[in-house]
Amino acid sequence: MNFTSSCIIFAKPNLLEFKSFEPMKSIIFRIPLALLLIATMLQGCVDRTVQIFEANVPVMQSWDDFRARTISMDTPQPLRVPGKIYVYDNLLLVNEVYKGVHFFDNSNPSAPSPIGFLPVHGNMDMAVRNDVLYLDNYTDLVSFDISDPANPRLLDRFNNAFQPINMHFIEGYNSGYPMAQFQATEGVIVGWEIKKTKDEIGGYYPSLFEIDVVMAGNSTGTVSQSNSSGIAGSMARFAVYQNYLYTLESSELTTYNISDGITLGSTLALNRNAETLFPAQGNLFIGTTTGMLIYSLNSPENPSFVSAYDHISACDPVVVDGNRAFVTLRTGNNCFGQVNALDVVDLTNLAQPQLLYTFPMTNPRGLGVADSLLFLCDGPDGLKIFNRNVEGAIPSNMLSNFGGIVANDVIPHNQVLILTSEEGIFQYSFADPQNVVQLSMIPVVN
Image 1: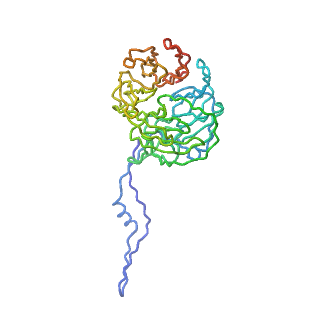
Image 2: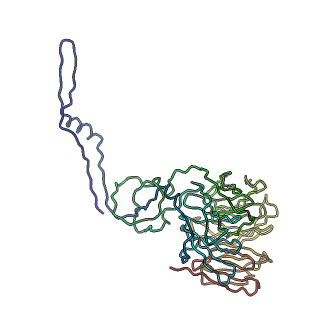
Image 3: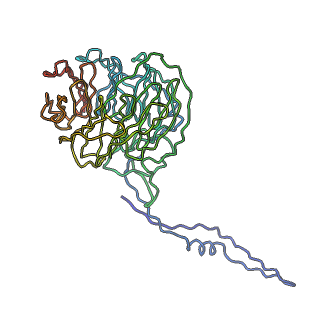
């Protein structure tokens, strides 16, 4: 790393004249301009130190170009960093973290067939209603017609629906190098390069999320008129109910009317660090770092607060079945959790949820329920399947444990369990709960 220090003053060798006019005489003083400038500027001269070093330099794209580009289906790509999963009819959708969505024909869970990869920069979440797929695209909310899954067609774009994604996770960033100075408002960061850069020490460095955002509507498109929505995992931040899409970001719940295009509805301040969103029985169950919030959807355009179930700080995915909520709490993440446990909560009175049981776990994450079964991803302990009929003894009623994987989230659907893990996407048949068998695996390629 090289350093230079300097203070430079420039002046022209001219004279500056001051004239004093008095009765009967005129006096002229001539002072060299260079001397005057030097005397003045030295008072405000501040020593600057400039460093030359290798750093992460952003590859930028203008906002206009980013939003005008064509997004079309690419050929199937290998799974590298799988994120959230979603099921819609015979489609299995798998998020590739911050890059887009893998499409699979899952009509035969024993042999899922890749359809293609939809590259959507900055994507993490998804939801489907009436053959329309909703995705986050960096700061924007976009929708695609997927009535022909092999050829998704962009319908709408709602600008600045979200804060920018964490810059450090964009492809090309190398944590072994510092970040170069740049103005985040110049455009979209589409990648990083390691280059020599020259910065002033003490100069301006952008915040990870420093971009001015203003909600703005956009053109609407024609949507399919089928009447169905898909199923998300317990880690989802998008949810669909009737003609509305709900998105969760940081401490805000936003409602969009999606009956015809994308129209902004209400935005609610939750006053908590919200993590997950689970719709059930005409309500939204929101997992936060300090508890579960319940919002009624009696007026779906304006969710209304019902109650809260509080706990110590921890990330807490939640799923609901009947009058029971199942909540996992874990350590070792950005939520600074202090326990690893499964909570069972009584929802008989939604206005006053009551904790029934707490069971210790290894490092629980996503979970799901189907009939008498509870499916729990216990991190490095893999997938655990419990009989939940005897609520007070759930850990003692474990039917299966698929170890050797780091399990993250699940979707039980039509007696098939879909699981996402660091190793890949697994599918299991639980038609016979006493004999759960693996059907297939889509591996992660490093």
